[in-house]
Length: 366
Image (cartoon, rainbow, N blue to C red; front, side):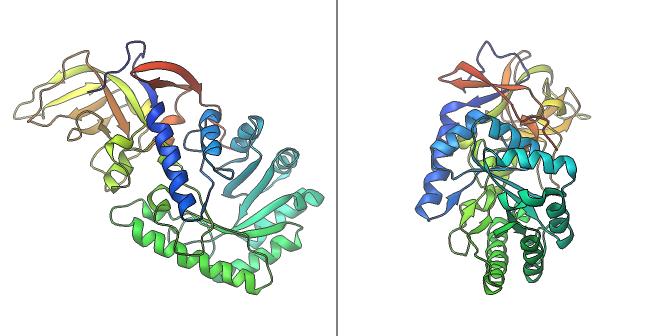
């Protein structure tokens, strides 16, 4: 069992530097071998230090979710940013996008004729400095248009003065048991069809952008040219349950202290309570998940309930119940949410804290 460093006060997020670097390098090498470009989603980590590792490993640029995230990473030297979101551009957003284009290549998403036209009106002559990717619904049924509607959106974007670079999607339905393979197939078909239609309409399609952590390593047999995974840098309990990572791939955990313990009886289960609640772990729990998180050193334990500052952990009968005051490592269900809840994280190597990284894009939700 790896011990929580003594100078870590609980609860605290810890990032294992060696595991992080290994995850970064493995994804970059795997996609490079398939001839795919990597554009990792920085909303997962929100830290310039990790973006630098990803770019140094060969990423062509970064994906972000908001203009605010783009501003943070541009301020730290990122020069190629894709805001993978169907933005609705008003005067304030247009002003911020104009400022971003002075120092970085900027692409944004749209999924309607109306959004493309509104963005063009707000940006005016600056529209020519921004690339548009049309968002495609590949089965997740959130945002995005069906492939047949992509040409109309692209024509509207071109008429508004934008450069139309291609199409993108998010195969979010791959975040479910036995679904990554199907989601990857549907992603490839939808993006391939949309790209074909745009090319037939006279557009120069240079980017066919897909991918998520569950499906990223399944890409490579379709029209996709770039992949945008995010969670892969850390791993989380959801990816463990989906079989998309192993315990030895987990680079981020929450250090927590046992503050209450109970051997259990006929009325209540055998359990401990940790000082890491929803305010540091986040409260995400998909319907298929077996708990609110996992424990790094006892994979059979399950977090069955979360309060703001309590995590109730049901402990397996075959293992000794941890002592009061013992410090354990918790794997959050959804790492993106956990990171956004803290100001900084402890960076650990060789069992020692070697630094702290600020979550620079925390709260940049607009």
